[in-house]
Image (tube, rainbow, N blue to C red; front, side, top):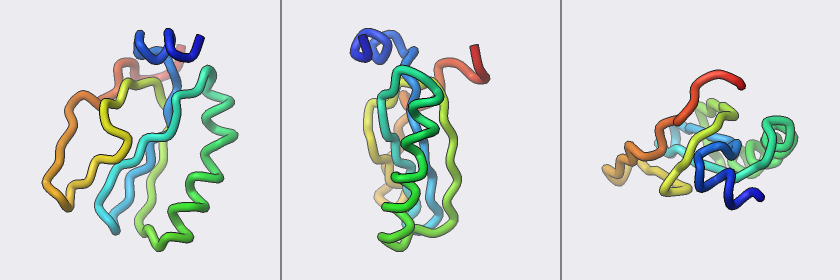
Length: 88
């Protein structure tokens, strides 16, 4: 089921953007927003233990093609933009 939702861009993902290092990370996919929110704290803790700073998080439906997008390396991934904004 999660594969179908992800293929259609209906799966939920945790998106975490950090200033140092300048990266955006995607964690998922999840079937529900509640599942993604429940997992979010663990991802934040891991990144903070690794020294990430300036952390911003969101949980949304999207279809990332890369799980890590690093601005420091000049990578940009337009396909990671959300398909839906807001909640259904």
